[in-house]
Length: 243
Image 1 (tube, rainbow, N blue to C red):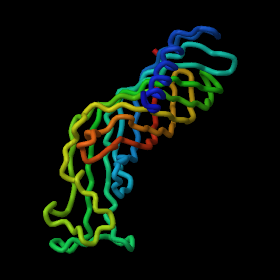
Image 2 (cartoon, one colour):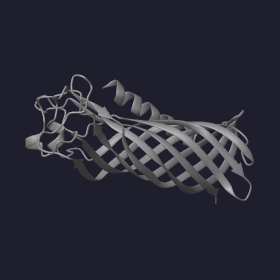
Image 3 (cartoon, one colour):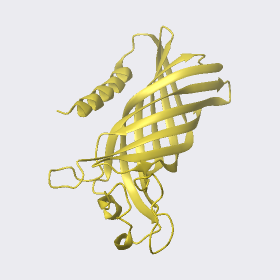
Image 4 (cartoon, rainbow, N blue to C red):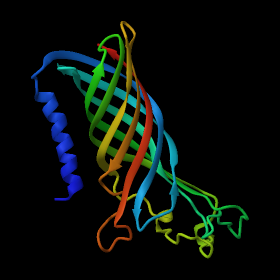
């Protein structure tokens, strides 16, 4: 079994164990709310494709169940159901790191693919600080699942008239390939701060990283890419209210 699959199973087991374990001071607080933020993503292609960061929005529903406090650590299960705009933005440059100019349009060549996902992360959430009034610091990690809803391409050149002579990176097969594997899975982890106010709710500000363990294209020996996994950094703001 691959190391990345083992890591995924370990994190999934950690979340399950926190849900079962009750060895500290019992809590039973369920909260629900909304989240929104900005995602900076790319695709880990092998062979490599020169890229910048693809920018897109993310947002959806958030849920948290606080199950116990073990010494100073507040233990919870945290989950979301989100819409996320991921993808990749190609960095089309020549050997001198200058933009490649298209002979037909006389403009610098640009290419961006947007992948619209539904994502469901399930986290073990550990926090330290004030529970009901004041600030907490938290970390969270766990598995994440996704499903591709749609994809779109934004480019300013025709594929059969691209300037291949001046490109430093000659890999372009991805430009005309639709995503083959719509189901996505991987590992996500984040850290942030939470402010809680009585009768108002909880406000969480978080930075999060996601590493996809699956590939968007086939990865057999006969396929072009041996790796094509999602990767993203997200900045998120969440509001939760106890119910």
